[in-house]
Amino acid sequence: MLTPEQREIRELARDFAEREIAPRAAAWDQRGSFDREVLDGLGELGFLGMLVPEEYGGLGFDVPTYLVALEEIARGDAALALTVAIQNGPVPHVLLEHGSEAQKSRWLPALAAGEKIAGFALSEAEAGSDPSGLSTRARLHDAVWTVRGSKKWVTNGSRADLVIVFARTGSAGVRAPVGAFLVDTGADGYRVGRREKTMGLRASETVSVDLDGVRLHADRLVGDGASGLGYALGALDLGRLGIGAQAVGIARAALEHATRYARERRQFGRPIAAFGAIRSKLAVMATKVAASRALVREGALAWEARASSTGDDLPVTARSAMAKLLASETAMRVTEEAVRIFGGYGFMREFPVEKLMRDAKGTEIYEGTSEILRLVIGRALTGVGKRETGWNT
Image (cartoon, rainbow, N blue to C red; front, top):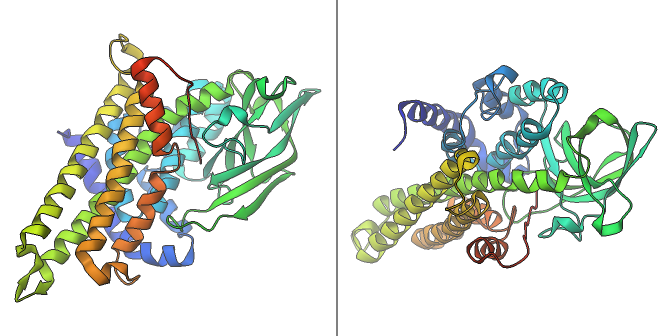
């Protein structure tokens, strides 16, 4: 059950999504980008700083409340919701958990207001599901770091103003420690490379980024220069909960479209909703959506309680993996069924469900494929195996 405050936030997010997002989603998908002004609108409402404390200009929500709003935004458009998730989740989390007071004061208010858009650069061509294999390097000389390397699949990489870049800070090859760096995208040597042509989430700008001798002062290193990979893995737990909420929003939109269509579409003299086969499909779809939302919420509550965990329960890492696994696979199955209910129209671009199916597929891949998530959960259950990650943002 939602609290009165959460219901109020849900209605505010739903109203904005229905007025400003959903009517433009198809055009954004066709064009391959969304309007910057919609981010300004979300920033004015505070939805770009939901997890940032009020002292830094944010709303100071807990994670369950943040995910309630994110689901509504994703119901309007999943590509936009991905940007909102990056803006609210991993980047502020790394700053809040590990940044200095000066870093927090400088960057968090601008991120929360939407004055600066955030990106997260961890994955590389040979380091996707296993980011411990990253090869980007940072060298320190006279209190200045020089960063060289290439990153792949960077969400917001071309739109962002600030990107957290993970790079090796030592000289021990693949065993060298990793640091997290705050990089201005306007810095010399920061170059946006190829934009990927994706099956779904087409309005999300996913690019490669080249770092060709980017020079950073020492104050751009976040926390301990040897602990960056751990920072990324911690942010991953929060990121997966965000993708779970995104997937629930996609599935819910597909369910609503399919239900409405089934009531209106007539065959053999009556609405197709009168046929048991259609009602059965809708019943299973609705049940899966409800179950996914419940598991995402459970993961969010586990995140909030992580500091007081007794160790008797599954760790947050496993619970966030479970939430994303179920929600993303539900989004894929529900959107497929929605296309079937629409029949031939479901295959046409003029109708909304084919876009939802394309968008849903992405949630099964980035921030940990379903296969990787099963390994993460299995490791938590048995205590056996390597900690796979799979962060592709």
